[in-house]
Amino acid sequence: MRYVIIGASAAGCKAAETLRRYAPASPITVISEEAQPLYSRPLLTYLLSGEVSLDKVWLRGQDYFRRWNLAPVLGTPVIRVDPEAHTVHLRDGSSIPYDRLLVASGARPRLLGLPGEDLAGVYTLRTLADCQRLSAGLPEAGQAVVVGAGAVGLKTAEALKRRGLGVILVELGPQALPRMVDATAAGLLQQALKAQGIDLLVNAAPAALLGAHGRVQGVALTDGRELPCQAVLFAIGVTPNVELLAGTGLAGPDGIPVDHQLGTAHPHIFAAGDCSHPYHLLTGRRAAYPIWPAAAAQGRVAGANLAGAGLTYDGLLPQNSLSLGDFHLITGGLSPRDCQGCEVVTDLDARRGHYRSLIYRDGRLVGLTLVGAVADAGVYFRLMDPNLPPESASRSGGVGWTQKGFFPKTAGIGEQKMGVTAID
Picture 1 (cartoon, rainbow, N blue to C red):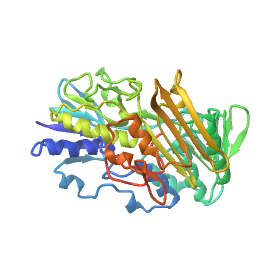
Picture 2: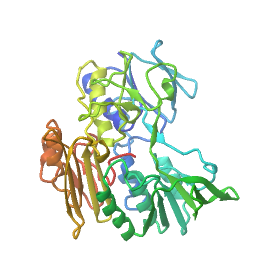
Picture 3: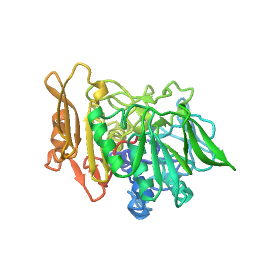
Picture 4: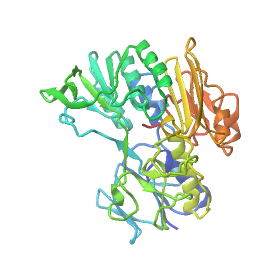
């Protein structure tokens, strides 16, 4: 049996390792458009700020593929999958046959399609190459504009501030983390941003990027304001990399629908990670949830099922954490915008900056937001999903603490400090 895995990040590598245990002698080819072994995307903002060095970012060594007896094809993206011929075609003109295929091709940052996005000084942050390009291109002083106050935008804003730049966050919605937290938690977050000297503009939409001599000089907003800057970073979400499946009927523009075994509509093709549409554990709806630990968990199930193990992936329980200086936030389960018909119980200690919001549906805990006091997060997660590993219910809350931030101990690929577990 010939196996091919497209993608060598959290889902792809976990799938390859799992598959190797089930198929110790079978050929496994891992294809990645990146030339490096597995690294931590959530640590890139710490690398940008200088809080960690490059050697701390690697999750697997240079001998990774040899140790696991994997055949790597690195630095060459797949441009087309032919399900009928059981073949993947690469940009360099070569092709690789397979008997079973896993698509774990991930996602890429979105842009708004604004005039000026091609100017020098305009960035996104998703890959190590993005981080290195951003770090090399930043001015030593001046101002940066970050478009998008989701998790990645917030952590990048903090990193740029640590680099000595003035930072303005521009959020199209009415608050930071508009898809994750309620207004009370967002208000506490805004206080934390202000304490760090980061300005937040809400209900603000860019209209164009302004430039001179080929380099960005500012951002024009739709309300007529102009924000002078020397760098602009977009953090407004991601788009799944599914163009390689064009014409196959296996993917839509928002991702690849999968069943509870992470199989696609083709019996020999599976999908996992940020390119896929798995089920939400609590709602039963399929959607894209670009979260690192979830990608690793999906990779484990998909890797086993490539070998015919028949494992079930019941669904994804969103678990997100964010650390900005002394501000700590953990959310999970249903978000405030998804809790129609639910009971919401809140508790605010404004003096200490602690906040708790618990969402119940038919007497069952289905969502939480914790600000400040986060030590018991794992207990709440076990109430929402009893199948989480036992260590998730430890007093640490299933959330490891290091000097730089939080990380879920159930991440599946290497314990690592993570200021952001959600990839916005």
